[in-house]
Image (cartoon, rainbow, N blue to C red; front, side, top):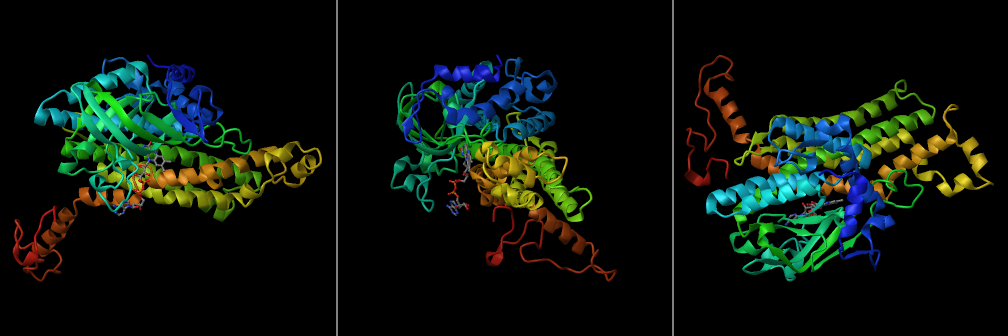
Length: 509
Ligand SMILES: Cc1cc2nc3c(=O)[nH]c(=O)nc-3n(C[C@H](O)[C@H](O)[C@H](O)COP(=O)(O)OP(=O)(O)OC[C@H]3O[C@@H](n4cnc5c(N)ncnc54)[C@H](O)[C@@H]3O)c2cc1C
């Protein structure tokens, strides 16, 4: 049954996770003010799914045919992908980061991988996953994605680390389940999730079977310690957005955590685990596009309001008009990649619908770099007040408040209080600790830019483009009517390609 945000918050009380925040053990996650913005932001995904007008975007059919949250569903069509993208934008333009689409991305990535495992080796992995997805849908769960390992020394492989717990791995296989240990370094919303989905974050070699593990654990499973940061800037009256909506990120240390087999989806199947990792990256980068488009909506709106509060009509002042268009171009530019990625998506072997990899990666790469341009444009349009405005305590200072509200007014029809609110809102989103958070999540969330470049090169058919040019040469189309000439590059002398002198053709070179 689908929960409301309040029911979601209440459901957290049944759990007893071991969570440290600011050096202390947390008694009750649901009542912890420093997690409040995170519970609010995640709660948006619950409440929006109950709003009649939003149901077609925010819900779909679950495995049992009953309505379920879009973020817990398996994609079956282009329309599903497009709706998911919309749902991410819809929730993130209110919540900043709504977390739960990560679960969608993980379920969809595991769907094909577990199906292939069972096609290749037999077994029950896919059936176990389906049972788990059904359990998540029935109970409308929030599930943290524990993928990014601590990684240790980046120049070494998981199996070569001095500290074996740098990566989560299987340390024992029993008749009824596995035991895992290790660290997952960055988990959005970790403390206020019901469960964690553990998945490998990179390709594992054949001898690294113990590291190729995907499984689900309750957040309060014995042996899990979570060390978290607060969600946003709770309790800070200057934090006009992130005192209400934000996400905590947390480290989770797994110390001899037992996982029964019915929650183990991948255990040692290195090839399929790698497929899962790349599929997750594609689904998640597609989601990141929707999330940051929501952030763009907030900046565009706030930028326009700030210009007006400053007394300027951004439609009439040429350079402000140009900057607003730039902000729109950036936001809708990478969002268009999300739409293209949905439209050009394909059914995978298991029947799940997957976003097009090229457009998902290009869209994420665009936003990873352009988030900094978005901040710059918002700063440019707004002015220095976004970091210079006296703090909210001055709003109630009997000595200064009346003067400040008089002399710091811009447009005569816009009250100072409004200008101050918009200014603090922009500061919060772009120039505060929260602003930095949005930069770094845009850059690294879903993988660092280099990972996207590799995926683009891996999937883009450059050879087909070379063939196109070669075909033009072969037809004499570029000879300006002077006849056909034999004009081939080494390695492209025939359809098969030569193999001599170290020159080889083919995609794998
Ligand atoms: C706010 C936020 C929320 C996140 N939420 C989640 C979440 O919910 N779940 C989750 O699993 N992850 C999450 N992530 C993690 C995210 O996926 C990672 O940050 C990302 O994959 C990069 O990994 P890293 O941070 O370990 O950086 P690194 O991998 O250390 O990368 C740092 C730099 O080193 C380079 N580099 C790294 N290794 C090598 C190498 N061997 N050779 C050459 N260059 C290398 C990278 O290209 C990059 O330039 C989140 C991240 C952020 C910032």
